[in-house]
Amino acid sequence: LGIDLGSQDMALAVSRENRMPRASVVVTTAARHMIRISKAGEKIEAIAVYGSAADPTQHPAFREIAENMRDLRNKWFGKAKLVLALDNPYLEEPALRRVLGLFDRVYLRMEWGSAKTFTALTGRKSAEYTTLMAGLSTAENLILQTRFLKGDGIDNTSDAEIKAWMKKVGELKPREVHLLRSEKGLGKKVKSVTKAKLAEIAEEVTTKVGVTALVYEADSILD
Image 1 (cartoon, one colour):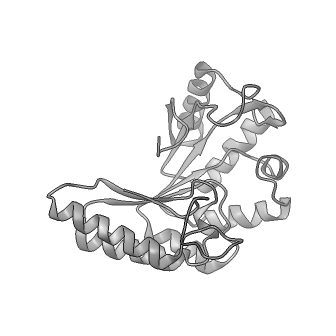
Image 2 (image 1 turned 90 degrees about the vertical axis):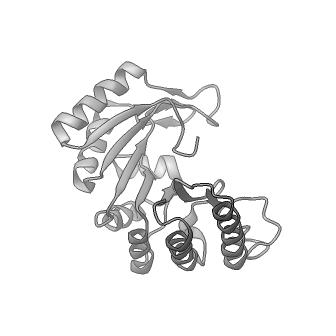
């Protein structure tokens, strides 16, 4: 069951400027779906909170929604995993970082090993890089998702960048690393490294960093 907090097509939104859905709409809609599915005798393996057009951490009621999703999961589908998918999170506030602990799995797209590459790929200031990495250092059940891409102003494929990325993986100590071979939505000029190169990186992460790394032909866990 997917809960999209960052869609651009919400009729009942927080404000004209912020097109994220109101918390009351999210919680009520999710509750209705869970009750209907439960009464039909069907199962839900996971409840995934994500943002298709904006990172869910940008929602002003992110904590409230996360707490409600946890409570609804516990009531209707106790065995389902509560999952959070982050593409470009904002975790400056300690309260936001604590919300990550409500989820069984936190999937983070992390495609940078340096502040320079972070700025190039996200458009955010390099000072935010340090804050974000510090905020993620205490996150449990973290799973990193990474694409190594080159072209059209994007490049995180150099040996130096990959080495820096591996160092960050070692510092964060995630449960797993998922190497994604996908160019979805990035244009014809952007190319992924080869599957053989990803397998080589995965082997190095597993043996040298001590974190299990897997290769997937996908763009995200939601594909």
